[in-house]
Image (cartoon, rainbow, N blue to C red; front, side):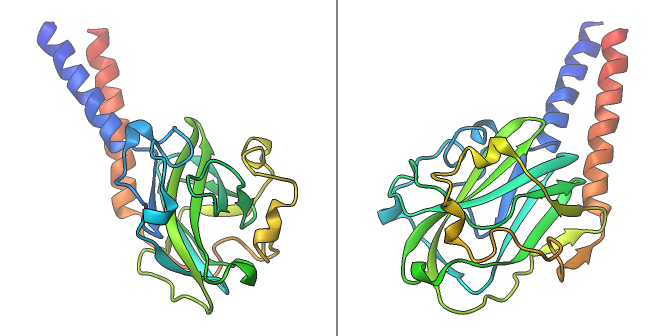
Length: 223
C-alpha cells in the first residue's frame, strides 16, 4: 500500500512537470523560465534592471510575439514600459487575445508607435487562465522596419485565437490612454493570421501523458 502511494506521488510530480504554465518563445525572456515563480509580477519572479539588461531588437512596423501555453484557454495581454524596474507605466501594445486550445501561439505583426524608435523597454506578456495571472518579460530595443518571423512563430492547428475583453488584464495597464503605445491596440484582422500551422503530435502527446498520469494516480490513491 505504501509503495503504491509513493508511486502515485511520484506520478503526480511528473504530471506537474509535464503541465507547465506558459513559456515565452520570442522575443527571448530576460530570465530562465521558472514555473514556480511565474505568477509573481512584473516578470515571473524577476525584477528587471532595464539599463543593464541585454536587449534584442524589436521592429516597430511589425514583429512577432510567440508563446507556448499548456492551458485549455488563455487570455493574453501584451504590454510595455520604459520604467527602469518595470514597476509601472505599462502601455498596451496589442488587442487582448483569447487563445483556445493548448500549444504554440504566435502573433506575427505586433506594431509599436514610431515615437519609441531608439528606446529600450520591457515587453511583458501576461496570461490570464485557470492558474490566475502569469508573467514573462523580454528586454527590447525598438528599431525601424519590419521583422522576419522567427522559426518559433507557428500556431498549433488545434489552436484558435480571437479578440476579447478582460477587465483583470486591462487593470494592469498604467492609464486609460495606454493603448497609444501601439498603432494596432484594437486591430481588425484575425489574430495570428498568416502564421504557418504546426502539427499537434508533440503537444498532443504531452496532454495525453499528463491525462494518463492523472488517471493512474487517481486509481492508485483509491486502492
